[in-house]
Length: 152
Image: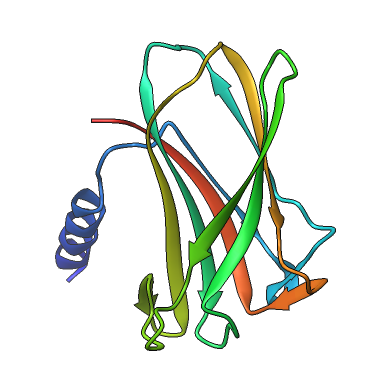
């Protein structure tokens, strides 16, 4: 029986293996609330500027989230100190009420994908995410993550 469990566990572990991301971090919100003062930050150390990356910003909400989208500001700071601030919309539900992202139980995962991006210089880049709606606190937000993978 132990051998069977070991083989099953090994099979699941190997089947889950894919491309290892260059960077993958998640920030979890306390009590499923994202207050405007909370700005998750991700620092990525880039060593090779010749590589091309896909960026995936993933927001996970519950099915009780009240809106069909979420506006965020993505703040970027380069190693040399240049700063940029860009607004982005993360779609959560379609107009008909169906989920835009992937739903599993009561969790909806919503990716915002930026394909084929190169870094202009080596060093530590910092990305900070601010929620960009008029309400001070939004409920039913579980976490937000940033993943970088080498572009194929």
